[in-house]
Length: 402
Ligand code: ACO
Image (cartoon, rainbow, N blue to C red; front, side, top):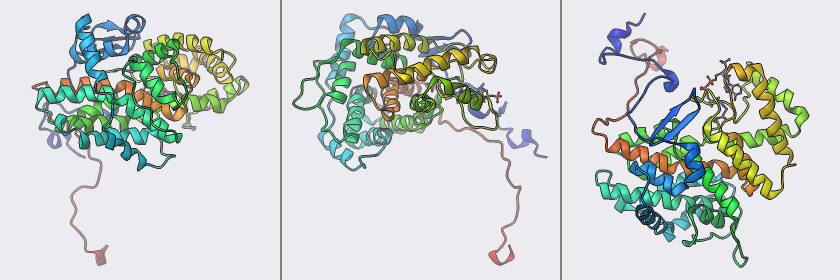
């Protein structure tokens, strides 16, 4: 019998909380979630009001600096971001080292990490000016990095940023424009893209944000920390869920096969889960999912794909799950990823681009949280404890005596 109080007695209280379901690792004034009410506030402003009235760069400003910008502050911030959209030309060579069939998420993770090898003047975490420049650089360059990962994967030349365009339109152009052909960004698609960015901008201490904070707590440079966040986001239980959700809808294929998949999801012997359903914090409708659902209807209306079989499966699955005793009793509602994949598919992105787009959107949240942590005087290196379950003390045995 292990006497835990003797082993772990250094702290007044020792908690064993796998998955951190009830342990706060930090104080934060950026984002508030009430999971039971289905409420998400950034610096106090509800996400549905921001989604209806604001836009991504304004939300970036809000997350980073704590207040909505005045017109002059917004103009200055937008111009600073716009001035940093280009990548160092040598970074383009870095892409060419990857296999063409590499997952774009692997490329984004690598290129973001490599930024610390190119922008030495913004890696000193103790210098507020360098922290600021690193933040602006990442918000500005992530669309270019992500679009380039896509272009590389389909064998097309990179499209350089057009700084006359807004943030979302510029990203769409870098992904879909082809040299020598005119490309005009549809404002409805640009608005839908901007909403996807906004709705993913921050979500307090989720797995990837906690990863960024943990990496940052050791004093690692900001680019390395954000690369760690990208890597964590990739998993199908987190940012990879939008890709997994659309793949699942396609695999189901037709409405008549839905009961088979619902039964699989309920079967405890089967590891299958309905992707895009459930959330650690929301035990009510994810407020982002509500906005995303409206956006999906708008985009699909524009593109005239209401009769798309994937969408029909999605709508029917949502209806069945919302009435099914298993999902109702466990409070498993569709989450933001359930709808974002449908919109991204309709815009023309392959599923492999869904998680990189989530990473680009979440970059501002990671940076805001990283900055908040660095500027917090109570900040310490993150060092979770463990409950040891292995062998007790034993003497080493020479190989011939084992
Ligand atoms: N399908 C079927 N059953 C589910 C699902 C699902 N999608 N999600 C949870 N459950 C069940 C579990 O089997 C468990 O059942 P039990 O109590 O009988 O054992 C119960 O609901 C609670 O599930 P947990 O895994 O304990 O809940 P947790 O809070 O740890 O997980 C998570 C949340 C990871 C999001 C989970 O719901 C899931 O895997 N969903 C599918 C993946 C997904 O959509 N992820 C996106 C999250 S949102 C984001 O990252 C932006």
